[in-house]
Length: 457
Picture 1 (cartoon, helix red, strand yellow):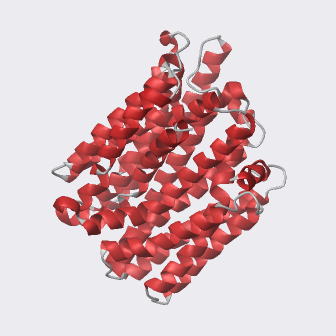
Picture 2: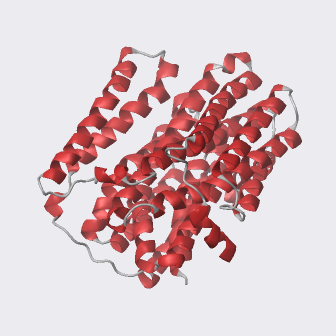
Picture 3: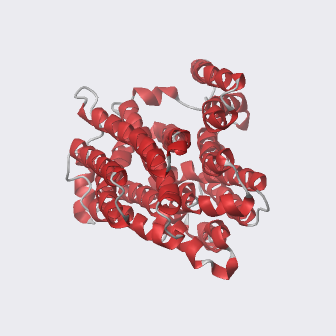
């Protein structure tokens, strides 16, 4: 059925765009004269807007129809991608990336709801499995695709091709959307849209990420600490507001009862850590391979294909390996990477370590996402989708931001020292995933629901 490829293309493209710019960072720095904070915002701005908009976007789908909001998000994403590719300076690029992330947030929550409309039973489990594979594959292939586009330099576009390539793909996907996706009429009272709640959750996320991106370069002025201290109260007020709306019979932006679903909260912890590790790894690799080892964008992208290859090969076996074992493989791969970088090894040994790390991610990512979603009752699917997407993107933003802060903080000691500092953060994140998988009372999402799906692939 062509509907599944259409929605997966949108998922792949929007997830890819979080990662594809990583390998273009050195070129963007040189071409636009961007500083450390600006290049971090090229990545973090997209992810932050994506994360902040996901919960309200899920509600918009309920109100105005999921296909309509999906199509609007896809159209805006395509336009924003064109603006990114035509940006004349770093500020324009950051603003365009924020718009691109907001557009991606519009369409992302609609995908999971549309899959539930299109499929049921085993077919739905299989569709969720392919969704998880698309998300994971986009995450680990972004480096390779970005390097290839920068090196190929189509029409002399350089790094701009990383964004402009979305324009024809998005246009084709949009044309197919109105033909193959089912119409889903909106329901509910539009007055129930909680814009105050949307502002609170967005402000809470910004209060976390903004000081982490800007703080080191500006010497950690007082406003950075004020922002960080305000994040938890803002998010707490958001949660209390949602509970109050639900208790009064109104429609909250987020049904916080979804967190009571068995294994959901624990699964979110593992998802956040895994996506943070993946995003941080992409950022570190982009800088180390090109600036540290002196590789061209094409050669750096080729090295990164090892991560992609490991993910793809093992994802075919996902669900047949215990989650703790898969997480241990991720830890082993990152530890190997730290060892070879510390020894000053060349790109071939780096690629070998990436193959192992990618293999672990391939074993873990798809079953993790699929099982977190499959445990949630149908009536809470929309809320779960919004929360899961928010956690994915927030985890990615924080992972990239914290890793970037550690990397740039140690850069005075050289590229190897900076890379080792970044990898230390990533190993800690991967160990967190492993610990989550080993907690017996709230186990990391088991892969049992994926075994049957993968056997039928």
